[in-house]
Each structure stands twice: as C-alpha cells, then as structure tokens.
Image (cartoon, rainbow over all chains, first blue to last red; front, side, top):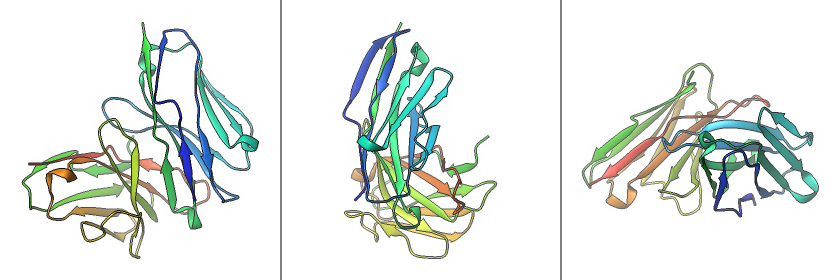
Length: 115
Length: 116
C-alpha cells in the first residue's frame, strides 16, 4: 500500500524564519518517486522537486532544500528565510505501483508566512 | 509554459446534467493520466489512473459509472461527471506523464465544478 503522511496541518511563521515541512511515506515498491508541490490560493499545482528512490542526495535550490532519508521513509522540505510569497499549501506526493500507476498525495501543510 | 491544458477551468451546471472535463498534453505523449478531486482545504484524492487505449483503473470508493474516464489518444483524456449532483461540486485536476523513466508529471490548472 502507498501512503503519504504530512502530520503538520498548518504552520505559521514570521518572515525570515526557517521552516521545515515534514513528509513521511509508506510503500512496498523498491523504485518510486517522491515529489513536493506548492498550491497557492489560485489552485494550480506548482512543481518543486522530484526525487527517485535511489537518489538520497539532499538537494538545495535557492532558499529551498530537501532531505531524503530512506531509513526513516522521510522526505522533508525546508524553506530558509521564509517570505510572505511562500504562503501556500504544500503537498508531498509519492509515485509508485505497477508501472508507476499510483500517484498519491499527502494531506498537505498550509504554510502562513506573516510579515 | 503549460504543457497540460485542462478545460474548462470552471463550470456551473444544473443537477442531473453531465459535464465533460478535458485534459490535453500539449507537447508530449501522455501514456498515463491521473484524475483527482480536491475538496476545499483538503488534499488531492486520486480518483483514477488512465492509460492510453485501456480502461481506467479506479480507486476504491470512486463510482466508475458516475465518473467516466476516456483516454482514447496519447494527448487527450476526458472525465465526464454523469448526472451531476451538488455533492459532486469540487475541484478536479488532471496530471499527465509519459512512460519514460525520467518523465516529469505535469498538472492541469484544474476545473472548478459547481452543481446547482
């Protein structure tokens, strides 16, 4: 079974603070992909990152960084020096299954960045 | 630019009518498409996975006769909400990808359906 858990429903921070969004997943697949998406109030999904199960290297992109720990089945997302424009709902997602035909999302974490 | 076009972006219909939502891949062959619905302040719930030329695979609890999915070509998948009722009002989003191992997943901008 595939499952993605984002335990943090909502987080509020003040601008310039660092914030980490947690993501824990479950899968029986040996090959799978993990994603993070941002969904602003307008509703569209903005792709942030994809990571395959064999690549545990952490990644940094500007103020964003991701920590993939296979041992704990976690794929956490950190925003450094948060900005008001970062306010959105962030989803972690898992692509797996036979022929990668299962693509499940976590429940999302709403991030509020206050000025 | 957008590589998955979803149309319409919003639709209002009367209870009992059917609504068709289109999802088109613009510059790649989408062998697999995912359909989701999202209620306000909730996550994206996978409804079904469709592979080109074959029947869609529905998630548990999703009525296949209610939500008809057709993926007849490599660039187009449609979701038809049949005999819509107010409880079908939701945000529907499609996602498309090809079978290439490193193929990205692209999302449409969603369709907001309101059934009156």
